[in-house]
Image 1 (cartoon, one colour):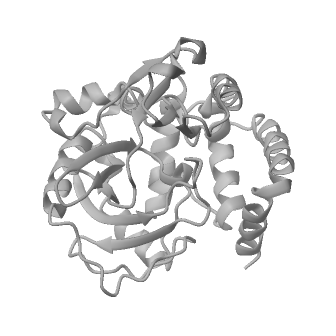
Image 2 (cartoon, one colour; image 1 turned 120 degrees about the vertical axis):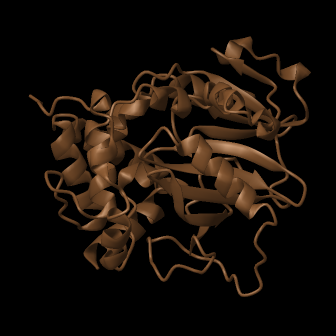
Length: 322
């Protein structure tokens, strides 16, 4: 109950006139947490966000095992697949070049971008971090403010905020794409455990009017038999009484499992409409690894499906921290 109240207060603070205060408090929190070892950080972070005391020495719940992977697993392919530009090469090499959306360019600096040559509406995102995005509309968007956002964002190493190792060595760049009309696309997110999609989400309103993450987005979860999951992940849901799944759902599941095959756990995202599938991204630690399925029986159920002993030991770091 206390955690729910704290999360509501954070959402309230992270908007409007108090957003700057929220960012400053987040900075102070990050400075405090920076003194912690990775293991202590992960335990304290999920405790602060969910109220759970997790066991990373003998993980059984899915969230515990995901955090264990976050702490111990060091597959270099994760860095490539985390980079929002480099992952395109991975997807193409796997044989799915046809689901890669158009890109206009990738740039090291905002000064390299010829604004006049861009289409009227574009979507900008940082290749090296989560949540640094912007919709740019000619004649409406403040370009100087946008440039400041991305130049400042280049200084952010997302690892320092979340201890997600896969972000640590991603090169900061700016990827520009044509702006898609999200009123005609659905956002599907597939959770892949040991090579199998075990459940998936449909998200609505994931970005706000400026292109940043929308705190009021809707998020419904379904099991592999396409039934609504009786779970709560502290996200608002939409009424799916008359919802019709994409006719390409099974195709997306197959692609997600193939793309996720080198990894013990990840989430693979797509945008789809009646005619097209577009690859979105591969996320290794949804919500920073802090997404919890309630009731916790579901955590134990899906946790059993993730066998950590299957992980190749060459990708595991020595459990020694100072």
